[in-house]
Structures are given as C-alpha cells and as structure tokens.
Length: 545
Image (cartoon, rainbow, N blue to C red; front, side, top):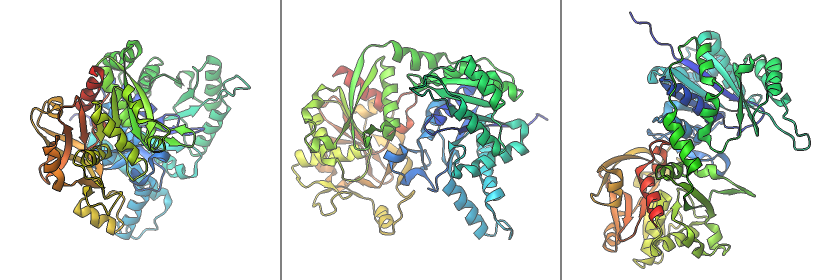
C-alpha cells in the first residue's frame, strides 16, 4: 500500500508592526514551493470580530476581495490567488468572529456533549479544524497559514495558541516563519535588531520558536545584523532571510530564492528539492517592466483613495495589478494617476485634464459621495473617444450618464442615492429590498461567480474569444430592464446578460474605440501570467489611442 502523503503546514506571523507584507511573504514562499513542482494552498486568519471582510471600510482595511463562491475576504486572499494562479474559496479564509460564531453555534447545538466550552482549547481546536479541512480538501503538499496582525497583540493570542497546539501534535509537519521589521532611525543611521529580538521573545512566551525570520528593512541585511538575530533569537544564520524594500512585489520570490529559503524549508521537512523553474515569472514580471520604456497613461477615478494626507491605493489593489499585467502583456508600463472624483465637483480639477490620458477607469464603490464628479468624467470619456472601462459602479454610472445626456432623462439616477428619482436606471433587486428592510447587510449582496452570455462580434466577445463566461460579483443594485430598449436604440448596447435572471452584465458603446462597463469585477480573476482579456483589450485601446 502506498504511503499516504502528509500535508506540511507553514505558519507566517508578524513582529514589531503591521503592514510589512506578510501576505506577500506568504504568497512568495508558496510560489517558490510551487515552482519546485509542489501543490500549495493558503489560508488567511484575520483577528477581527467581523464574520467576514464585507462590512469593513476600504479606506481602513483595503480592498474587499471576493472568492468564486462569494465570500468577502481580506485582500491577501487576492494575493494568494494571483501568485499561486489559483481559485480559492471560503475554506481559504477565516476571521476571529467566524471562529467564535461557529464554536458558539456548536455549543448551542450540544455538539460538545455538555462540556464547559472555553476559549482554550475549543477556539484553537476550531481554528485547526478549519486548517486541516483545507488540507484534506485541497490535497496540497503545503498549506500556508498567514496570521494577521503582530505577535503580542491581545487579539492574536488565540491564533498563536492554535499554531502552538498544531506543532505539539504534528511536530514534523509544522514550521513557523516570522516577518519582522528592522528600523534604521534617521538620526542614528544604523539598522536596529532589538525590536525583532523583543518580538521573538514575545513569540517564545506564547510557546513558539520561529524556524525562519524574514527581516524586512529598507536595505539588505548585513552579516553583523544576521549574526545578532541568529544569536539572540536562536535561529541559524542561514535561516535569517533578508527582505529589503524592492520596486515590485513580484521580485520578492526571487529575493527569497537567492537566499535558498525554499531549499531550507524542504530540508527541515526532510523533503527532496526538485529543480526550480521561475523563468517565465522572471521574464514577464521582472524583465519586461524593468526594461520597457513605453508607457500607457491611465486615470483611475474613485473616492476611496485618501485618508488625511495619504493616498490608499490598496482600496483598489486588484484593479491596479490587473492593469499592470495587461500592460506588461503588451510590453508597456502603466503610468497611473489617482484622481479623486470630488475634485471635479469642487472645481479643484478641470475635467479637461482627462484629455491627456490614454484610458480612464472607474472601479467599484458605494454611496453618493463623489458620484457627480465620476459622471462628469464618464461623459468626457464618451464624447472625447477616450477608452473607458467601468467596473460594477463604473458600469452603473455609465448607464446613468448616458440616460441623462443622450436620452435626456435629466433626473436619471440609482435608487441607492436618490430613491425619489422618476427614472431609476439602476435599482435594487427584489430580494435585496427585503434584505435592506430587515437590516441584513453582511454577506447578503449578489456575490461570487455567475454565468454571462456574450453577444457575438462585439469588442467584449472578441476579447474573451468565447460566448459564455463566469465572472465574480459584489453588488445589490442592477440595471433596470425597463430602460434597456431605450439605451440600445441610442447606441449603448447590452453585450452581456445573465440569462437565468435576464440581468444586464455588460454594456458597450457603439462607434467608440473602447467604452465598456461590467456589472461584475473582472479584476478578481486576472493573473500575473494570464491577464484578464477585458483589461488586455482596454490597455491595447489605450496604446492605440
């Protein structure tokens, strides 16, 4: 009888401060192992009490990523999908809120047999049950587990306890990686290891000794710092991996590769190190962006860009990365400009500045703030023949702009903003009206994969090269079919429809180089080495402008 394969588990946790790139580290390690022929899956553990990420504000938490089965997750799940070229689902994400909710429901159903249910061991047990379920379902050689936040935080303790308990029971199948920060104080001018030493001691107090330390810093770690970390953190020097700032996140797997991180991981697990192949990754994601000089200028118009004096590109990270992949496919780079739509409304920017761009993107969003500025931009793109790509809300607002300025329905709007409009071009689905009436907000939108049938010989269909597609959704409001014949008579064609419910999925303007709006979010399915066909077609239109 063949020996049953045992999945190996790699926990990735953070030290010193958040925002160091644990998700990129997790994805990069997974990519390296994948490049050696192993199968890899990944799971993100968020410490929030939120049951999922759907109710989190994007300016505080970044993009909400949606899986194929409709779970609203942290943006790191999007990084896993892109790096591993995989389609993940609800089993690849958990929050503290979800875990506690599950344990409490099990207790209410007497599934603990009348035991006294306690935070430890029952919460860690549920965490590990979910991790093992993913391993069993995916049959992966490796499961990467990213624990959100940093060691020492109150809300992280329960997950560190889960990791400790798993290591205790599965000693030879578990490794720990700590991503820690080494600051270089400006007035001192020397890289400091003490914060990392303290973080490791805090981790030790939770019963965990890291096997690897990924040393994040502005610059490459020198041997003196490696020696200090090795000595005081009880980690071999070759297991202290320098992770300096790089120009692109796609360089990170190669930074780790050059220090043999994947080889060391396999050695610790007693596994054979197959030949590694990162040639295509190197060529398309490193060499092309580095050496190409031609650029396509894209204006990304939205309202989730700023918090105080800072710009938050993480609010639209999947859109930004999708545009990059498409540009690199055409051997160009993207020159992004983030434009706050409220600046058009307040007169801080003249709409004519959009003339200098090769393409305009309006991504998803909610609510009324900045909407009139977006509609001004869409009108400009339509009239001046500038390639336009509207995603979800960007599609809905394109329909509203067309209704107002071509059909002359001056009060045309979405009932999300104006419930009294006499021309509700965009309106709630019937079941969504009931959800909102009963205050059911979390996880109640139209979410995940839905089929869409394309009209032949349109720009959209020619981009996809097929007539039936599956794309991911995240919205409550839909195009009102009462206006469908009217907009089509005037040249805004419905070129994609969900036939099960006769829902408008794609609109495309006649006699325009590229003016397309999608009710779905194509950015969720774009991959570094396989750019999404609509993003590719949009960028090509921008290049040809």
